[in-house]
Length: 109
Image (cartoon, rainbow, N blue to C red; front, side, top):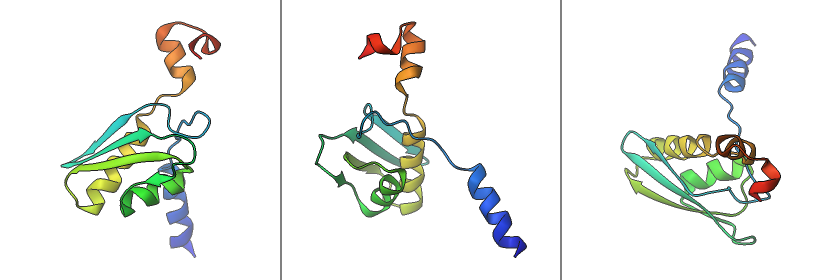
C-alpha cells in the first residue's frame, strides 16, 4: 500500500549514523531534548547496556553493546528517547576529531 511505502521513505530520511570506535562510543556525551537529558558514557568491554528501558531500546537498535547511561531531568519516555538520539547524533568520529586538530587519524591513536 501507498501509506506503508511513504512511511518507509520517511523513516529512511530520518536515519542517523552513529560513530563507534571498536565497540563502545568514543567519548562521553550528553543529549538534551526539551527537559530531558541523557548522559551517555563509554563502558569497558563486556559491561553490556546499562540503561533504562527507553534508552536501552535506542542503544540496542544502534548496535551499541557496551554503554552506561543516566537519565537526568524529565522521565517522560518521549523526551528521554529524543535526548538519547540527540546525544548519539553529536558523537564525533575519529576522522572528524583528526580534521579539527589538523592531524592524521593514525597520530591520534
